Length: 403
Image 1 (cartoon, rainbow, N blue to C red):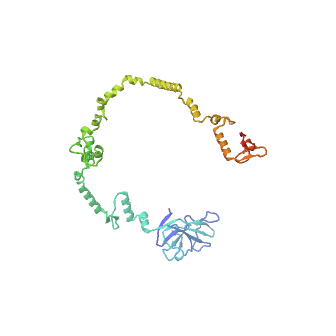
Image 2 (cartoon, rainbow, N blue to C red):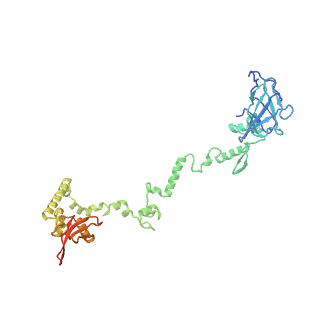
Image 3 (cartoon, rainbow, N blue to C red):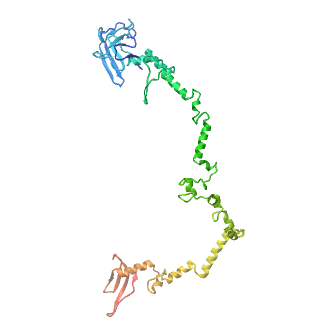
């Protein structure tokens, strides 16, 4: 907060320094003879607007002008200067904000003045000077009421223009409220359901609403939904209780949960019909046969007997597979499948490979010796050797020897 407040837009005289000016040699002696034109006197006005704009302006004191230098109390080292409202060549008191002086002079320590707040005169009048406006504001805030006078406090409400809440209006409002409430006794409220016995009234209103919507029939009232008062077509209860879209065909004697329970084959009536046949099969003796020990033993015996039958009839998988393979020409001994010859104990895959080589691969025959060589697919090695005999009548290729 500023050290002091003054009115804006008027000529004012303000302090130049906040403490007495002191001699710069001993820091103790008060300088009582500083005048507007003292040697080395340089005065700066520092000012900050409410928008935060900071300025510093040199001010030259005068003795009979707009910046007159003065000493309010003689020989105290305290000085003041005048600031005009307008017309000054350097500064004027025409802007809200906070300002203070700084200065130097020959033989004097540098100094600073108090911070001074410049604001509208009405605010200083309201908050400091204690005029009618200040009194009215205080009365308005502390609950004692508006004091009245020539400057009345008006409140404008958006829905009503210029409503004056003065003493007359206050009395009118109080009278109207008293009349509405029965002269303050509450008698005017007797026609309103929510009175002093509001809890009982609320209960009554809720009960009426439940009855109006037939919700009381859920638990607390007799319902005739399968008679003269069926539920509304399309309501939840209508959809749940009947399959007919356009009407209500529910019959309590046949369609209620208890009636369904007592009707075969869904309900307990089954005990009087199908239950007799069931009892003849599921007797206590029959249930005992399904006892855990008997059941496990019986299953094990069945497995043992089945295995024995397969062995006795030669129908086990172990016994049947070799015979099936042999009869189907799938014996693992390929000699058995191909008859006699040099091929012995070849696998099926190797036999197929050699047949492919006989049909497809290159075979070299040496004419001078009759030597035969069957080459592999890449013609890089022999896969079988043999010979050819020629008696000028018949050429015989002897049996190959596989490498």
